[in-house]
Image (tube, rainbow, N blue to C red; front, side, top):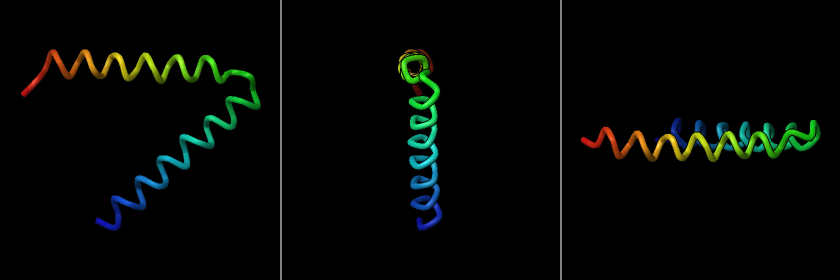
Length: 51
């Protein structure tokens, strides 16, 4: 359980640092669009391959 919490914190921190880098580079719109597209694709795949 403790390892999972540490992993979750590291992944969230990594995502925030990536967002900060995208803001500095001026590519935050592209990053957010890709994230939204990934979530939409995930929803569609989950509906197709329900257990």
